[in-house]
Length: 256
Length: 240
Image 1 (cartoon, rainbow over the protein chains, first blue to last red):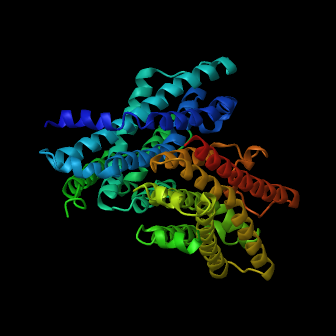
Image 2: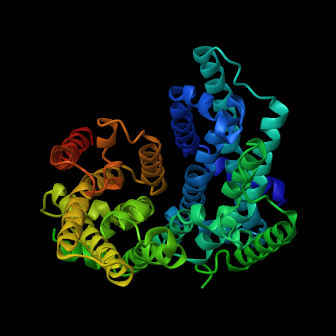
């Protein structure tokens, strides 16, 4: 069975999970304070950032710090637990399909859910920016090209983090430990981005990236810039190792 | 149903290990912060306990509330995973008892977490600051207050977890609730009484009326969660 068909099957498995509702709810809650406090965007002269850029960046910073990694952790639980319930994994493993492809297909579904969450955030950004523009009588809407580029880069920066979450779920059978470890790894990211070794901590990548973008948009604010070296090689290395280990360890418990 | 029985059920789930590791991590936050940024905090005029709590409590509270969420989801996941809940329902016991036993266990773990965090703060006070006996009593009051403010989270997360068969649904709802709590404006008195926002409050720098209102809100919200659980169970039985 090809990887494409397996990915299709994995989408079917989570079709009735209502994960979209949870992701949408989180996204709505993300943008409500931005609409309510839209006037605060006009008091950022000290930082040297325009109101429209501030509206966009504050929302995406709130998303990248906790909401996005936490909902992705929930998504890994969804993908994993759906398969474990009623020995679903045993049935899949008894079929003549490659275990590696099956594992990769599930990881691709996780990446898709991440993209869905980011796309929802972009959609909600435009809705809330349009509402705030009306209430503030100032155009807070940014160019779709710029917003989509930033959103795509956040998604790319999240790939190593998702690989780690996926590896944790695969390697540890009891669900509480990978979830606990995942949450415990998200919370300190706010501190890690201020250290020299942020590039070695994938859970901080999305938040680090958006913070560095804030530094670029705010003329009077200096933040650590995302240097491609050693970030990109480290990120690629971590992703490859985690995905490889996930594929090796996938279904080990059921195959004992 | 007893708390001891619930404890036995969690034996091979990594429940205790997660709480110990999480508690140690939350306790490590103020110690690491003091080690790295000692100069920013030592020498200030405010009392030691105020400085340490103001600098670290948001992160510590976040870790605590996330641990409670994971713990609540896990406690009900052990029941729902292989339909064990159906066997529990056939026993000659009230189903509400199961909920209260789980609440008891999670409350015990909350005391454990709060104790570890109080020890960490005490260590920072002893090691980096010249503290007084009065500050020790403030520390004790603070963590007693924190424990009561954790009650709505404990009951609330268990209520959500008891309703949903699949573990990821209460986990997702819990994450959304915690995220909402972090997004609420801190200067709005009524919004700060949101059940999952209460644990982010600290005792220091507050007047007695505010503290009394927080405590009252925590107790009322916990009672409402218990009443809601009773109604849900009755409704579920009636509709089954």
